[in-house]
Length: 113
Image (cartoon, rainbow, N blue to C red; front, top):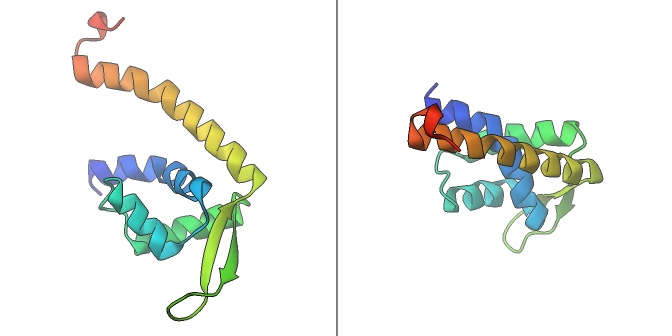
């Protein structure tokens, strides 16, 4: 597994919750939205297991809706627990990303303010 894959695996739940927080989406649409923001590694095969896990943990729920082209689609929305989880993930990410970026971009920990 590449370093990129390992890093993405650690934050993918948060990314999925963030996309779903904007509007209900179905699996294929979700993977396309993640790809459009610059995560080309996130395929449908990656997204569906994440959706199942998030649903099992009561962070999202699925609702079947008619499709304009073809069979019904399952649209996912956040639960109250999912909204709370996204807030926690966002706060934790902010607390981690600042010092990590400082370390990685400046190189010398003694130079970090």
